Length: 341
Image (tube, rainbow, N blue to C red; front, side, top):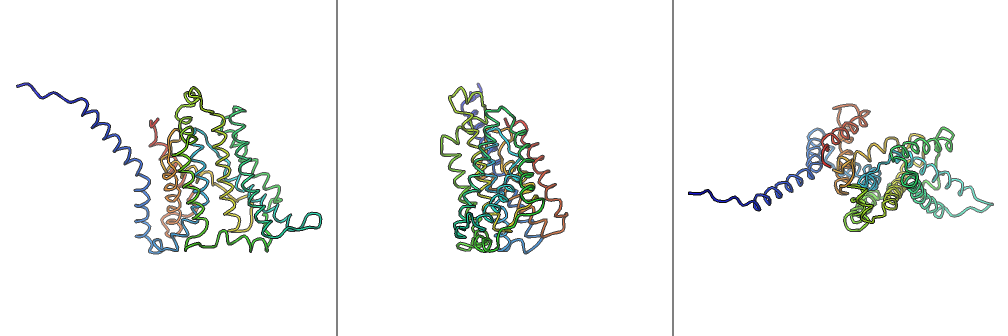
């Protein structure tokens, strides 16, 4: 009796389904890790699972999370930006410098406090856009590696802020600070404003990446830039736009951060670039570019904040090692990403 013939088509479909299932499990890795951390945090300290602590974690995540959304586009396109922390510091300092100057009056005329605050916010967004455009221009037209460009501006931005602050701190006028502080401290439906803004930026980023031609072009460029050029994609324009988008995200994060302390110093935004890149990588975006998800980035940002929060609530290791933990996470995830593309 002859053996039954093997259905090669069925075998291929089975292997394809199995591969898709394994990839799906990999995509759930950050979520599973976050759930595990939350369980561990609850067991280690009962205060971890309180609503107040949850709001605190998400509020502090908002700054890095918003920047990480923009960083996701840059990394998917095959780029990198090491300057976002210094950029945020300079934007914060410039905002405060301008607002204080307007409060003192120009030509004997001083605008109203609300007008000054709105002007400062607009300036922050425009500066972020301008810095992003500068990065994109140097990378695409100047043909300089993104790593070198943003490493250079990292030093430039923070040095300019140090000069403006004369080595100290720039502090917002008390009247303006009282008017501006609700942007950080006010709750809407029991949820702080920074969290609402974070959600809005994340949803917008997800729609742009997954539902627009621009998002598809970003992924195509990261997968193979030369093929993207052959496909008539405006590679230089799209790459420049990703840096401009990141710059605007840095501006938004800074607008939310300034009312928290009402000041900017040379240490403002220190290591934010590490945290933003870590959030993107932990969320599953390939460092080589070509693929990534905004949802993964959000989970990655929250996961890193949860780690930091657990370290603050317990004495497992020193809180001064937060940056070391994030560095280890980046290296570990990059190691496991080997060979994905």
